[in-house]
Image (tube, rainbow, N blue to C red):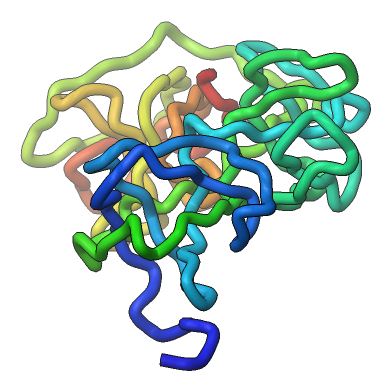
Length: 255
């Protein structure tokens, strides 16, 4: 391990061994406390600097951004309108920076504090915990890494086709389709397929018994693991597949 504690063992799942312990905005007790963790609490540890662990900021931690650079959307979501927007530990321009957002990034808005928004800590936000209070619990942490929120689409940029009622289907060994197309409107969770299926790398799971393959389109990966609303058409196929293949005409987040 190097002098500053950086090594190839990160990230890992860390567990608080004794608490409460302060979560701070920097690797020093002079930095602001942004949260407290109790004994047994688990966090994603990203790196180590001397006696401090750099962690993915807990969702309960305090994080603030200037409201001037946030465009409000429905369901308490906000879109960053400026470049290099600092995420700070307090609603104060002199507070420590715990992350930085780019134009178009999305944050969840929690409360308005004067000219600031308190937000749910975004994926870029990090904090620090003293190593004396933390132990490694597991190396299996990839599924716990917080990911950026999917971008808010401008619905006026895409034409809205005429769609039929929501289509739900029980799975069958194969689905055969004719050369005609059927309009569909689907709401479900977008998930990466374990294996490529014809022109699809993703599927939308509507329920435990219903799914659709989604034809690849640019930017689709940004919606991975998110609840989405898709309007499109079922494509005819020569080769039968387990689920219908859908061509996307419009996709938006379900917030």
